[in-house]
Structure formats: structure tokens, C-alpha cells
Length: 217
Image 1 (cartoon, rainbow, N blue to C red):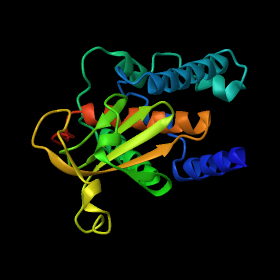
Image 2 (cartoon, rainbow, N blue to C red):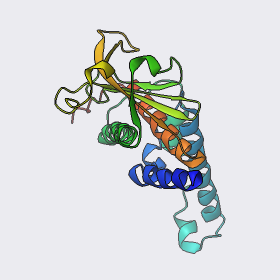
Image 3 (cartoon, one colour):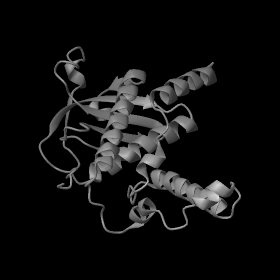
Image 4 (cartoon, one colour):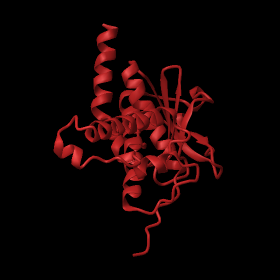
């Protein structure tokens, strides 16, 4: 049945795209990513509640003695209005993780979806555009429960794809047009939609980050 097919597709998507470990992004500034900001706030609230329980002795004497009662630096940085400097190795890990998840999402769309022509791709719903970059050479859009992937043409990997499906796309951030192939995939369930949206927002965040600049030792 149609419902069974949707559930099977949902299972494949969730298996290929595990939940984001939000604790890793404790200090990330999600100023333009509403879904990620919601997840981060839930994480901060839960941690604060645990700190409160520990301080009240509700988790035993040992927990009370070790209770964290001051503000968490990560939470302070996440709420700051000034942009975060990308100085520490953990920041590099955050950004690399976001790129990896986004590229995995692109692989899922290309594997479970269908190839389409450039004229079929809608104008709106852009959640990331890394065209012209090395880290994330693609664009992802969600419109009406349908996800659209525009990926830079790879002459080796895409050699078997018909040339009439190629198109030239100009990156959102400017620059030369690049040759691309196009994929589309219906989003089967709400749960799959949230997982895809979270990864897409995380990619959008990563593309906004300054380049990793290690502190001099």
C-alpha cells in the first residue's frame, strides 16, 4: 500500500540520516535556523533543569556536591549577538560534521529520488546553497513536502546521466554559473521532514561560519 511504501522510505531516510547530536552544537549561533534553535534551547533547558535538581539534592549527595550552578559558557555564546570566532578544534569538528551530514542528505535524495530537468526545479524554498564551494557543492530546497537537490555535475560520477538533464546554475552568493544535475524526492512523513529540515538548517549554519582559524599556541 501507499502508506507502507511511505513508512519504508521513512525508515531508509532515518537510517541513513541519524539524529543530530545537539550537545555537540552547544555554543553554535543558530540565529537563522529556527528548527535547530528550538532543539538547542530544549537541550539547554534540560541541562539547566538537571543542574537545578542536582543543586537541590534530588540526585544524591554526590551530584549535589558537584552541581553546576553558574551559567554555561556554551549557552552564553549561543545567545550572543556578536558572531563567534572559529578558533577551537571543536568548532572545526562542528562545521565538518555539518558538511558531512549535508552531503549524506544529498546522497539520500539522489538515491531515493528521481532525476529531473532544470526547468522543473522551483524558485523558492532554498535551505542551503553551497554551489561554488568545495565543502558543499550543492543546493537544497524544500517546497510542498518535496525536496529538490541541485548538485554540481561530476564528469566521472555523472557520465551515465543524459546530457539534456544538465543545466547551468548561478550560486546564490554570486560567481560564475556552474553545470549541475537535478534530483527530486517526495518527503514521505512528518518525522522524515523534520530530520531533513534539521540537517538542511545545520548546513545553512555551517556555510555562514568563518573559516576555521586555529589559535596560535
